[in-house]
Amino acid sequence: MSTDLPPNPLSVEGSPESNAPIRPSRRALVVGALAAAAAAVGAGVAWWHPRRTASQDGAAVLAMVLPDPDGNEQPLAQWRGKVLVVNFWATWCAPCREEMPQFVAAQARDGSKGVQFVGIAVDDVDKVRVFAREIGLNYPTLIGGYGAIELSRTLGNDLAALPFTIVLDRQGRVVHTQLGPLKAAKLDGLLAELTAAA
Amino acid sequence: MRVTLTGSSPRRLPERLRYGALALAFAGAHVLAQAFAPPEPKLLPPEQAFRLSARALDPSTIEARFDVADGYYLYRDKLRFSVTPGGAAPATLPPGKPKHDEFFGDVEIYRGVVAVRLPLASAAPGRVLTLSADSQGCADAGVCYPPTREQVQLTLPERAGKPGPFVEPARKAWFK
Image (tube, rainbow over all chains, first blue to last red; front, side, top):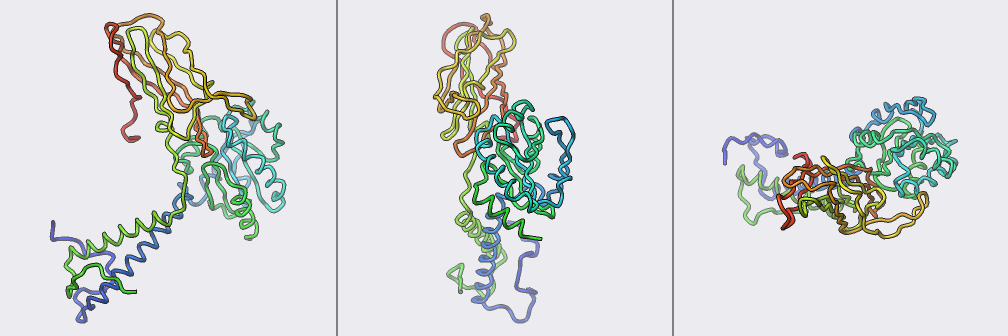
């Protein structure tokens, strides 16, 4: 082992040349406290990490521009200032189709409070139209094609699977990302919290 | 709270011991973090959920198979194989398990192992072939993976006899 270790950056005991060295028991306490602090940080990181995305501010989400089913380019930035729920989905994804009626209901209920759902379909426009009609889709869905899967990967969808949903607050910050269905209770709680915030 | 890390209490911990104590603290933090972390369903990347392999059975037949991990399934009608050069007769896919889909109607799915024999258009002893497999599947946990195409390179044997070894798709090293 080398003897030229750098000074311990996490040292909490002040100058090592101090004339009043810390007694061993206190040292043990300090190390213990450090361990507890590290544990708290570690647990916090573990709790927070699964919801983290590549960019905590939603700039990358709001920077997306995709065509609607009629072929008109739609920048997501037009919904800046809304509580924005961006849902990557496809007709070939049964769990996606199953959760979308609750998005339709939430859009109808909370749209007037500034909530905006936007779908991004990893799919062909024809199938999207049929399905949108079938469930009475009341929010825009843009056509991403299969390339949208790669787009979602850059936004934190590491497994490139669907459904994948990103929730932005009015300030454009990513407050939640979800791979797999967003449970109704979780969605409703998020929307209540975010629409209450100024 | 009083915590002692070691039985002995030297007046001043040697440098190495201090680093050891720190390492211990972080190890403890990691264990605690694991214990307190919310249970997240651990999903497999698609190439592990649906593991493709193939082998040459003889100079005119290859066998493709998917090992589908527990809790995952493949759609039968999304499974397609092709062989270049030369081509192969359309694969006869084994029957799957019926599953009702509200949008697509009745479909069939595969769980576990699905093996498919592909008779080549012509025998080609010693030839190197590329098998392409298209597939699409989902996890019971509630996610689906997009349709993917994977390829396996196989060398046909010179003569009939023992089947060749199973070969998996070559993957980029950083995916391993």
